[in-house]
Length: 185
Image (tube, rainbow, N blue to C red; front, side, top):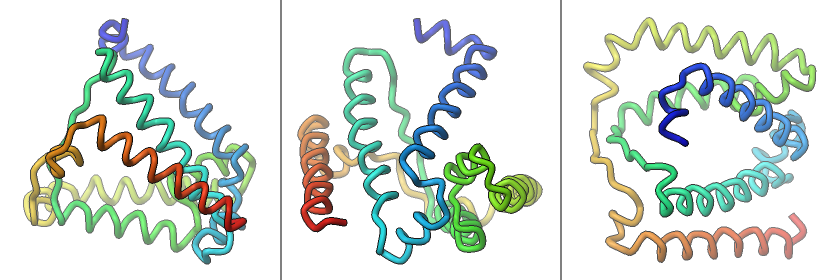
């Protein structure tokens, strides 16, 4: 079933659009498309963003690895580099600092009618992507390859069984959410 979807580009586009709309809807329902909520997270006064994203990681990690276990999906760890992390972090950080939205929340905010997200965020995303695309040929041979590190997953790095790592991480994340709830945050 998934092999035929992988070959069907039109189905991938439609599914991507549908999943994107669902993702934006859930971001909006979770309250994280609000500038005030994002500002509260950055000021450590409102932990809505952290709780929503942590809940998504808990469900996503369990779901992905169960699908992987049953052969429905494959994981593809990729090599990384300090240069690409620094450049990506700077691009993300500058955009976040200037507007107060990340790429996901800016798209969700546009869906709610936020004009600052539309004109500042979406236009900024397009301009930023264009600048990066223009600079990419020079960056990829110098800066983006600086400090390369291998494609190592957390279980490989810790030399532990995958499922033990998943269970430990799930327990830690759920425990952290319980602590936030207990503290009333």
